[in-house]
Image (cartoon, rainbow, N blue to C red; front, side, top):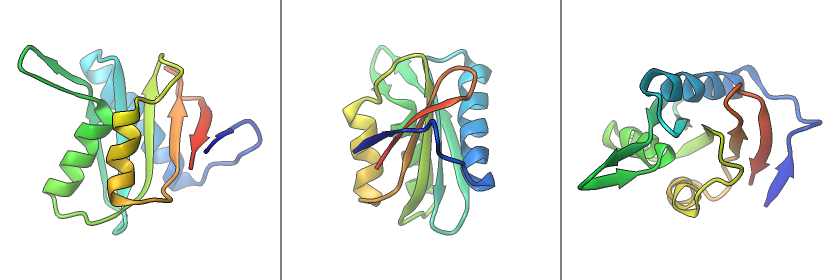
Length: 117
């Protein structure tokens, strides 16, 4: 369920994944950047992959990086995009590893606009 981030203070760990997501987006000039923190505190960042034969969202790519590194759970996720909606495929990728991890949706400046629970 989405909630406004207006009155929510992010923890330093949550701020870190928003910064990582923003950096991933800027580094590749992608549509989206994303980052996740696993249950061991490790972080993974990725950007949108949009090739003729292979397309995944930034959050799916970050989840794939986490899983391929041995993560079995996610504490939190962040996606930075100019799109006001987090794609359902991105939300489902997070929910595959955690039913309760917050997903922070931030604009291109890194300002968190919404938190999905």
